[in-house]
Length: 166
Image (tube, rainbow, N blue to C red):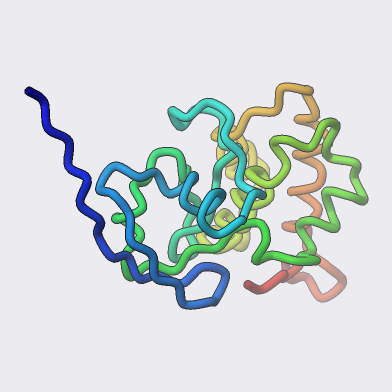
């Protein structure tokens, strides 16, 4: 007879700056913990195998596909979801450049852009394009998305890239 581990494990982490504690099964996926247990539905389930990027979040400032991460792996980590980026300049750039159609992929692209900023605040055209390859838009808004992201990295009047902080 097959037996399944139904044990619950405590996970302590910060989500959008708030300390959180939850007890989960070893196989629970972070995407679904965020959505179902915390009501943070901005991260979407698209492919459940890491290809589309709609589930992208930041883990300690780096973009991760939450459909590929077990909740227990988040123990002690700092998680940021799209809900933690209220009114960011990246979001504003997406609106100004009309970088969405249906909007399903938008949170993932925005989170990926924030991760790009954390790693390469002076990203050039090639780096931006490479980073955007990890997300898929089924509506083909790629040029608008690229223009929105590029806007964030374009130097302002003092010659420095636009900063949007954390």
